[in-house]
Length: 125
Image 1 (cartoon, rainbow, N blue to C red):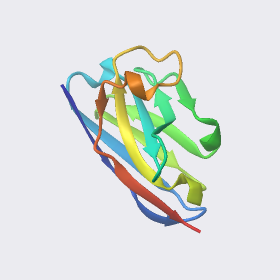
Image 2: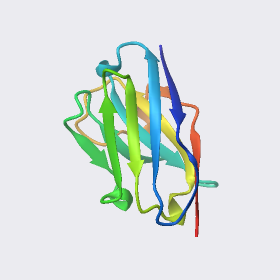
Image 3: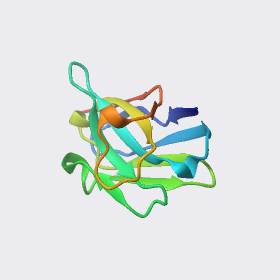
Image 4: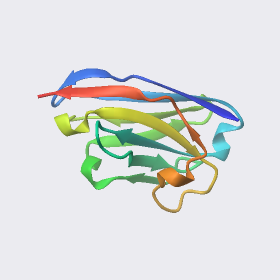
């Protein structure tokens, strides 16, 4: 079992920044590829970013490229999502995800092994 706890969400004006953190506990953190998904009201959960077990490979969805960065600290069992130049369309609940497989492509929600409880990000215009 792996427990994932997100933090760092909140209300920010457009153009602002937030850094989300996801703290893991349980099984060895470095055994998992990690990702972030988001779900806006009335929409399906969508992939945002992913990072390989070592941190050497990352994927970002096109809409956040150049604005968001994913990183991890295996010693701290934590994955981060740095979000800059936020836009109102980034408003959503953001979920941390852990996947057993190696990261060779963006993560599909159907293959996520463990989910966090989510943290709300609201961007005002």
